Length: 492
Image (cartoon, rainbow, N blue to C red; front, side, top):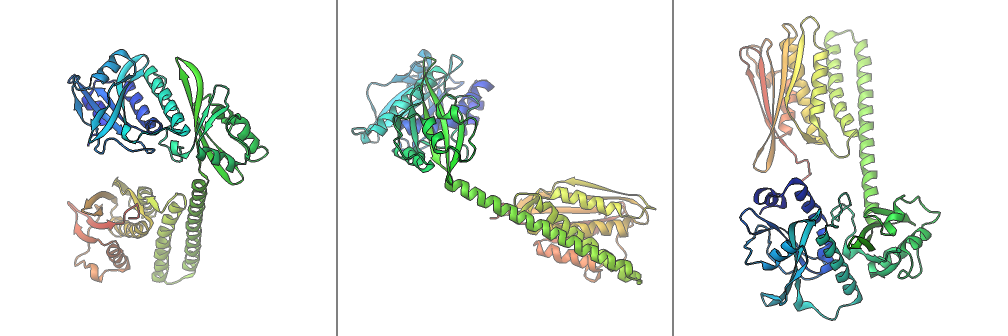
């Protein structure tokens, strides 16, 4: 199924500014669909001389007309005379007789989409007349407001560049609450949900007939600070959005100024009680802060352990015992590095490339000074879950340390860490290659009988549900390659 961008770029000759205008319109047209109780279809002229449906939206406030998706449908000019007429005359065209579709009478209107005085597309509005009855005041207000917005689309006054759209998180929709203002900012209509939201803010009187700005600011006076844009939104003068908090209640307001022939006639204000949403956001922020603090404390504790081991190492007279404690300090430091990175993020995933670079640099810096050693990192590890990151950091640190300590310490050279992401069906794979140009593997090397470092690596690779191979590099050196099966970063 093609997307709006696919249709506009592949099937039409519209310029970048015109394409952006249509994206703005589609970003906000759920509002018009809900107010109209109708399906909307965006038609654009294609390169073949006809019309192609670039986007389709259904109302959330009433029955739909088209069950199937209209995007990609091609129509000739003769099949859609109303669209052609609306585009040519730059005016709204309503067909005289309803069309019948699956025993449903459908009223269709064609609304030209105008930008800077030039038509660039046509919006068709499809209303199911079989469900029509004597309209309530809410429905009359919704339909009148929808007609006003349709005329603004035809005049090039809607959408508004830079204005917030209904797709943003927490943005109010028609079903959340609607208020209609006159030019002076007085409320001429308020839906039941809108009245309830205003009352929860602290206003106990009538809403209709009052100035929205006065009743909201009066309810929150001497309470929490209010947004400096509040007045412009509550009077409907600017197409902005703001949020008001009072008595533990949070209500977001969005204003859409309405105009006719360039003159402001009032405004539509959408509002939504987002108290529960904000409460959950605060809970998540508290949870994230707690998790980061835990990682920070674990990192500090590990660094304390490393410091104690380092002090103990200095008191040891046995070289083997001192070496063993130094190895323990290095391994504890590697785990602490992962927790330090996690303490700086906002979730339980890390960008492992940063850890890899720091671990590689640390291993190179402690290499024997008599033989220069350099390190290089290629490819990308990407983001990893904390569980995988800790094990992977240990494996990589051990392999790099072995390459520097045993392969390059005497002769010098370079060690390279290469990481590649891939997939194997449902599993995500990570292939890491650690290679050096040092003295190579010792004769008779057997990982099963090797030292503690190799045993740690083998065990951790098994924890990562992976495999590891050791081989000689050409023309000299060692190449270690392991494959790990990663947990999904989405926690699935």
